[in-house]
Image 1: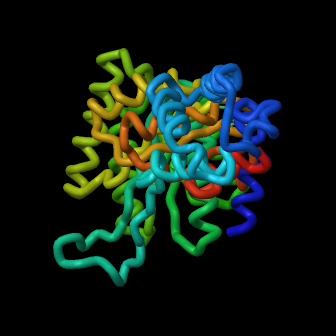
Image 2: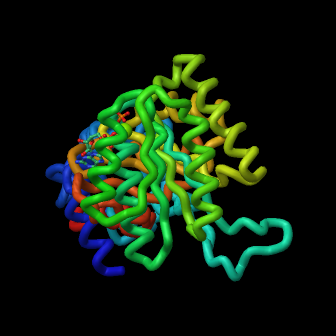
Length: 309
Ligand SMILES: Nc1nc2c(ncn2[C@@H]2O[C@H](COP(=O)(O)OP(=O)(O)OP(=O)(O)O)[C@@H](O)[C@H]2O)c(=O)[nH]1
Ligand SMILES: [Mg+2]
């Protein structure tokens, strides 16, 4: 557990710097001048907490700061309350826990998102994470839009020794998804991870294609895909909120993954996105390597933002 705190703190350093800047003195006291409050507000915007969350933080801090030994303690308390319920827990894929109602213990994860969000990389990292934890995982390359997408996923799979079913460019993505799930069920896999083509949430036809994919998967098993996870580019900050809302309206998202939080000062957007959508966050991407995908920990995230403030 300590490891995750250290990793989050290291990788979210840019966001932490945006919030706390030169505020070490500020956080040591329980009272701030008007000028300091204004400056603090600016820093919160720099870390991209978004208007609503910034206003909420300031209102509460101004009212409550005197009750705490330091501004840091007050901020920690507010963050902790705002982020409650944000940690997604992946259901057990233990076959022995399958019931009569749900005979298929196979868990199907559909990874969605706009172009370049990090879907393919995240699919490989997730498969690797679960495989390392002893699960039998199957990757499915359902981005049939570009030949390069299939190659990209297969390259990851080869490097990490992951099972992967590829596809031909131009093939029907829904049919590929169906075949991957059939293989998943019949070959005793516990999880299937489906990579999809990047799509603009504003393009009606592309969103319809996604709905079709889900309808076809439901023919495989009515519960599929149990997980519809939106992969968001964390460096886009709160700009992702509308995008997430439209995906949610189209397919009913069950989870979020925020990538690229390592290279941005906009990590505050995570709190804002959760506050707006109330969809749990399962993993966050903290770099390009396989091991840089981490299960989301609300406590580690908060400590990373205010550590040494
Ligand atoms: N620094 C950093 N880079 C990341 C992270 N996740 C993904 N990337 C990089 O982001 C770029 C895009 O990732 P992809 O996985 O190809 O994104 P995609 O959503 O599959 O893209 P399309 O298939 O084109 O829609 C790649 O260069 C990845 O290495 C992350 O957490 N941190
Ligand atoms: Mg991709």
